[in-house]
Amino acid sequence: MRKLFLFAVGLVLALPAAPQAQAPGANRYIPAEKLPWYQEAPQLPVMLAPLWGDRAHGEAGTLLKVPGGFDSGLHSHTADYWAVVVEGTWRHWVPSTGEGKSFELRPGSHWTQVKTQLHQDACISRTPCTIFLFNKEPYVTEFPKKN
Image 1 (cartoon, one colour):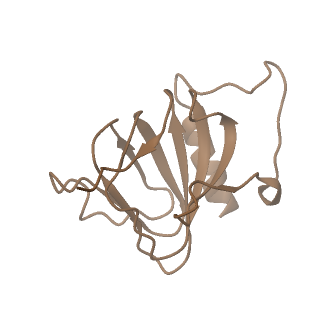
Image 2 (image 1 turned 135 degrees about the vertical axis):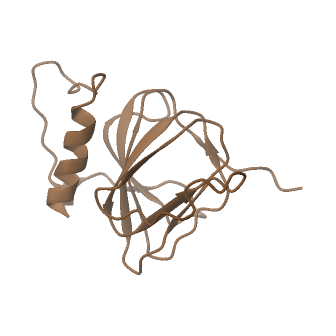
């Protein structure tokens, strides 16, 4: 898993507009066991660990972890994002078009998602899934209102 995580972070850092260290000229190291995981919402088993930035306010890199068998339900986000599977097998799809439904995304796979488009995600493996997320604009998860 460590090699895949380093691979995922390397992919994002290779982007032309890759995020910079929080303090210019300063290196930063956080061992995996020291990541500051927190629960995204009390009703969801979604754990987040910020790697840099604050996704609610702008550019950020974040790890997302969910248990095997988790299904997000229909939702959208306030910003485009890029994602890389670090652990587990993931499915990401757009129900209105069927886009992505046939893909099983294993470690090293990636996808992009445009803001405000309703989509759904699931950890289709028995093992937990860990996903690396990168956003440039403020990013909030929104669920459609039920009538």
